[in-house]
Length: 331
Image 1: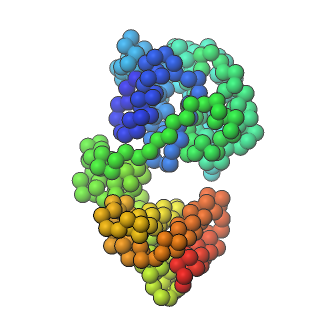
Image 2: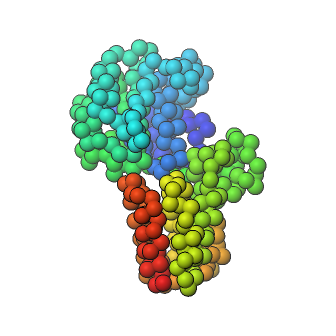
Image 3: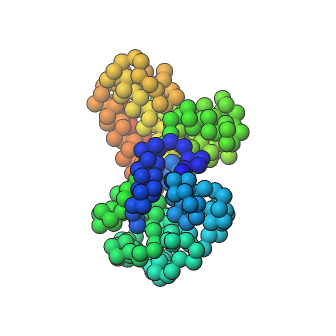
């Protein structure tokens, strides 16, 4: 099996290739990973490989046969993408019911019908229970590729019946080169985005198209500076833009997490640590907090991120975040 244009994740690619080339590809797999790590891309490549007609199995997807051409165009009759509705895009019972009916039909051209299931960010238990029945006794000519941010969103009974693969961002240097080569990005800009996004290609491409990671980095650094102040007001002032911008708040929390972890690494190991936050000097000054204080700051940020996922009130969440950060910093 080949992975044209798919960067990094060599262990995952090797495992998929071994199963595919050996004729042991499972009937159900799940790809998990943070947004932007290529879960959908890998699912589409895998689906393409499963319908490819190239005689040499290790060269699938070949990209040249009629099946590959139709798959790339999104028109292959035996590849079906199933997605939920609403803000969370979670699969519904009705969607799984229709999927069950289709799964038992004979493939039109390929050896298998392939279903890419975009599970969404909050998967309803009723829909999962219905999907479980399909995965427990799968049709002989069907394959299911589940795409989910975290396998923890899936029922344990489903997790036990799928082959799980975890995707991670490639090395920042490789991601920057990819952006230059494939998106014609300015090399300096690509290096900056690779650092800001820790090599997450999806987020890098989104930012290149007009995202706001630079703004998130600016706010996160301002909040870090405020934590070093003897007064509380600068922290609330720095966090003011977050009260009405959920996406920006999420990015700032991500930036703060990396910044505090850099400070923890410095506190534990001294100079010479690799800085992931892009704010080494600030992380150095934050490392003057005790390890206990830094761990408390990290817990506050991670707790806020969890509450954000549960759609907490933005103004209250931001105010609570600032109060808890001040308390953790001993202010």
